[in-house]
Amino acid sequence: MTATATRPAPQAPPRRAGGGSRQDREMWALLLPALVPVLIFSVGPLLYGIAMAFTDAESGRNHVTRFAGLDNFARLLGDEAFWQSMRVGMIWAVSVTALQFLASLGLALLLHQRLRLRGLARVLAMVPWAMPPVVIGLMWRLVYHPDAGLVNSTLGTDINWLADFTWALPAVIVMGVWSGMPQTTVVLLAGLQNVPAELHEAGAMDGAGTWRRFWNITLPQLRPVIVAITSLDFVWNVNQFSLVYVLTQGGPGGRTRLPMLFAYEEAFEYGFFGYAAALGVAIVVVVLALLGAYLWRQLREAA
Image (cartoon, rainbow, N blue to C red; front, side, top):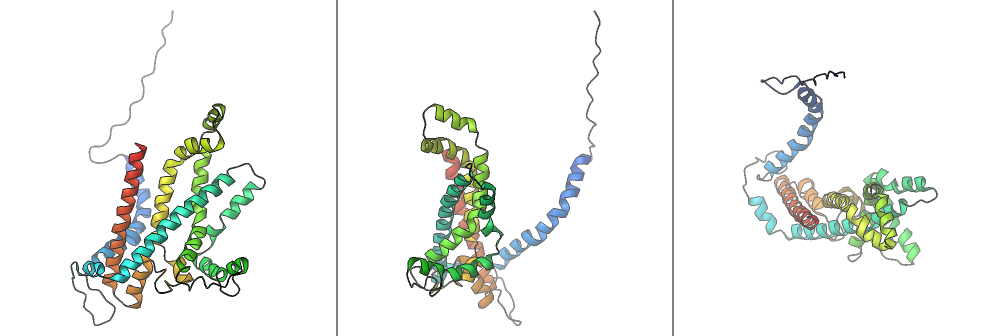
């Protein structure tokens, strides 16, 4: 009977007491070139904007900026135009996010099927994502044109969609849903492809129909993806500016003036930079509060 010699396992080299390992230092050396621009162009302006919100900064060479405390925020509380823009912004953000999700889910389910020319259909679904916001706004202005627009020609109406007090906001919401569908569709389609096929096969063997398998298998499996993409969509929609500015400039009569449009007007048309910065801080607080409540509810239901 022969004995086999076992080689001792190699031991990891001892770490230096004065700092991290060589791999940690190399990691930070690789990350720093990417972190520096983020700190300069993202964190820096954010902190500067928060600081400006507590000043009376205005345009003009002879104006001396002074600390104003909470004066700008007190002014916001009594500003009817601000509350109107917040109401319009919440209607816009919630409507676009919800309709965008429903339309994108339907499109993702369709593109997930084994269809002919499925690859081409997936490419065409990404077209709005590749278009600049200014081009999208100009295109939809032609679509809503009161005389030669596609909508009036199709419906046989003569409505001036972008100048009508009743239809302006719904028309802008439709444009927002169309322009934001591609990224939501891609994320949901990726989630559908990660749903195990064995679950659907087991459900079919148990006698579950298509709708029951979708409700009890597909949606629960997509829950983390749905929470993530709807949260991001809501933040993006609240911060939307370029699409609506090109399409309506906030009109008619402020019916489509989103909070970002209101902040833009206060800063660059009237020169109230401190007040506009306070408005931006207020929007961030409101969005974080609503988003936190939504995520807390989703996590509670999942638990």
